[in-house]
Length: 220
Image (tube, rainbow, N blue to C red; front, side, top):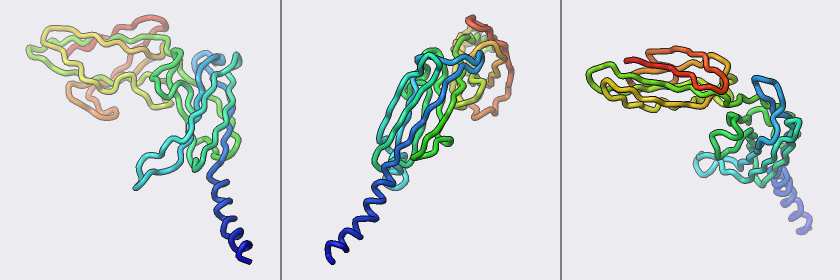
């Protein structure tokens, strides 16, 4: 009887263990957003997390698996680790801003944990360059803050510049270049004071050519 009771006590724990060790699969294809053609040889990563840490801190990564797309842009991955209760999938390296001249892209909400998933990615290529020339016509120095909305599909919602202050001395010009997706109008936000989100005093757009350097001049 004692043995039976012990087995009955272990059964819920065993069930919980198997419940935590869910295996999640994902497969799909990666396309160029502009041309619609498949992208060969780009890294696709899946990262498993094992829940919250301590008093609600960020989840800890318990496993990372990766592969590269084939000639048809296809990938297939499987991941599973103890306690895993959240999974993300990335196109492009988790540790790099860009990979193979494409924007980093991520999905997590569409992944069904412990099941098979079919997820296709459309990502923007980095095939243009936008050069800002900031001319300070004032009698004293001033700072310019610029944000660029350069990823046309907005996944992730990524800026080429993060509002970095460009200090420009009086009567001089500074230049700053950013690689972006080309053949489209690019919105840029700028101000002489720090701003958050899109709350800048100036909102403009400029058409950026492919494989070229488009010059945008801001005069104070």
